[in-house]
Image 1 (cartoon, rainbow, N blue to C red):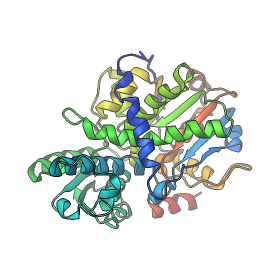
Image 2: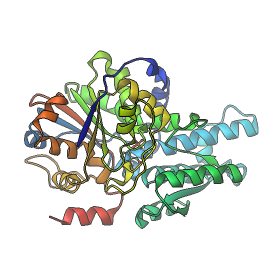
Image 3: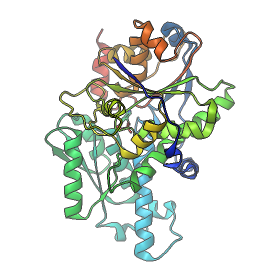
Length: 389
Ligand SMILES: Cc1ncc(COP(=O)(O)O)c(C=O)c1O
């Protein structure tokens, strides 16, 4: 475990993500068929076990049947890109999402292709969005992504292209092939020259924080003192950090970004004071977090606003998953995939590290918000981990 206290500047990137984008995303997504807020669960038994005051767990394991929070981002961005394309093509500004999903533009979209690189969850969301809009969809996966994550994407009608190397290599290939074939990239990461679409992906994620704000009021809870959020490229963390600041202002929780030791591009960038490329030599068990290059938008927000960047090893991940699966004391049983438990794995490591616990300002009164970002997105891997002991 490693820690970098960032001393946030709370400065320039306040409005990298325009607050109205969050409201628009919530208004749009809450009208999708089968929309339901995901639960915000108080885990008192677990909090007691971890020696903190309270743990709130945002459980994304059943989001739109796609089993991860990513359902909110990629699909939302696909619909936006398709709508803009049709508006220009047909010079019609009145086209709605319902029109698109009804299939009435199928003919106009028959040569329209969306493409992305993925570790699994984002690709599934893009494929779902493409399926609803009736566009073609191609998903690039690197060879360490599991077969069942690929099958989940194929079942939504997308074509999977396998790439040698890691996630970053698959993204490089997408960029090259998209230019050659005039495909539309729907990436969850942003880079020089590609900033527009990821803002919609990130705005989609903010539905979680909109729901949390409502749930805190409905359940008469106190605002958490700490948010511990896991980082891959930093799109998720950037969104939650920025939205938390808008929602709670000076009362916002202390913001801790946690990454796998084997893929710590945000942590290394923070130490370096600028985006730093990390070569992922070995895959972490937290497959969704296995990224070596930060999202520039996410990084811009986090650099200015994050309190702490922390890394965790893989060792506690299986036991964190089992702890949630069995429930501590009267806590409900929760299905949490490998990338969902990074925050809990950190709390478990902190139990043996009082110095680090105090450096993070965590004590028996802390109210910790964790994001359970996925359920069993690969059922076979999940079942195997839960069965082990
Ligand atoms: C389950 C899960 N949690 C967290 C993340 C991290 O999100 P980001 O890459 O935006 O940091 C991912 C990314 O794919 C994921 O799949």
